Length: 216
Image 1 (cartoon, rainbow, N blue to C red):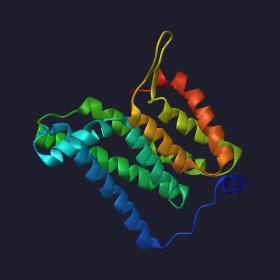
Image 2 (image 1 turned 30 degrees about the vertical axis):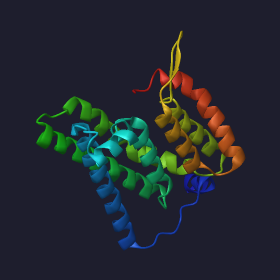
Image 3 (image 1 turned 180 degrees about the horizontal axis):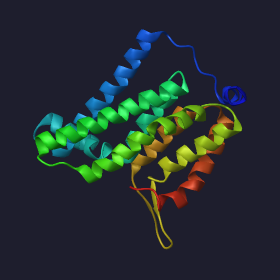
Image 4 (image 1 turned 90 degrees about the horizontal axis):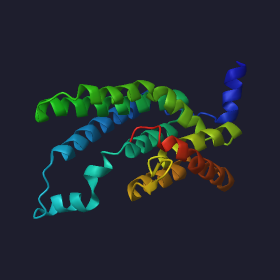
């Protein structure tokens, strides 16, 4: 009971809209993951021809690189978790999103690319298994408690680590896309100007040691 009361000080769950809406929202997250998984693999297999207008648009938007970065998937999962009404729903919604995406991507690769990327997909399945716990932490990061600021900073540090490559003798900026994902995450996590400013500064500081540890 004390733990439950303490969690309520971090962030208060919103009242649900009923079981029908809950099922609809969960199914929507699963379908969204499936569609994006198919779309991401379709982009991987697509041979672009600049003569075709819609292929030229894909090339200009650089969509292939957008969905090949981990940052976009982390941002999408963060958004799903944050805007879920309760931490339990955040866990369920995020898990279904990743499960749908991974299954669709894997099956599309086997069916249309002719090979099974088992070792590669094991990383994503591990992330899917861990996603419920991570989603709960992300959900509480939207609060105004001191712990929420710490969670904000850690989340932003992970996303910021994909903006830079840092070593003992080098530093490089890894592109505008990852920087946009970082800024979008800061907007999603926003609670107050002071909290966001502290979390952004702390996240950027923490990102430097993380950039050499996390997979890119």
